[in-house]
Image 1 (cartoon, rainbow, N blue to C red):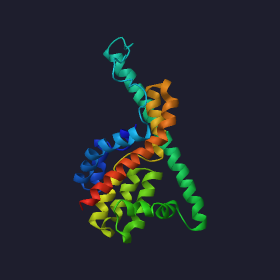
Image 2: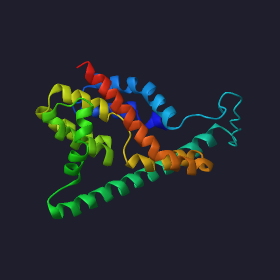
Image 3: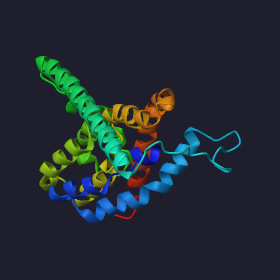
Length: 226
C-alpha cells in the first residue's frame, strides 16, 4: 500500500509532462522512491512475527470455465471498480469545494490555510524562504485534493518560481498520497479481497502518511544536490 501511494503510474506521468513538467524529474522521483517507501513501511508497521510470505502461498484456483468468461468477469469487475473510485473522487472533491465555499464567507480558502500549515515543511524539503508559502499552498492542494490539481497549479506558477523550487516540488508531488486516495485504497483493494477490507481501511491513512513521508524524504535528498 505504501509503495502504491508513494509512486505514480506511467500513464499519469505523460499527463504531467503535457502540463510542462520535466519528464526527467518525474522519472527520477518514480525510480528513487521505492526503497524509501519500503523502509518507511517497515518502520511504521514492523514485522514482529514470522513472515507469512517465506513459505508456500496458496493462491487458490480459478472458477472460470474458459478464457472468455475470465475476460468478461474481469471487465465487469474493472468497470464496477472504476465507477466506485470515480464516485468517491467526486464526493471528496465536492466536500472540499463545499469547505472552500464556506471559507469564502470569511475571505479565505483552503490553499491559504495550507500555506501557513505547510510553510515549515516547505522549508524543510529545501524550498527557498521567499518561495516557501507558494510551495506550501501547492503541497496543501496536493494532500487535500489530488496530485493532478497540484501539478496544474505548479504548471501555472512555474514562471514565478525558481528552477530549484520547481524541481523539488516535482519530486515531492509525484505520488498518489492524498486524502482522496484513502477511498480509492479501501474500494480498490477491498474489492479485490473483500475479506481484508477492514484491514485495508485500518491501514489506509497510515499508507497515505507513509507515502507522503517517502516522497518528501526523496525530495530532501534530491534538494541537497541542487
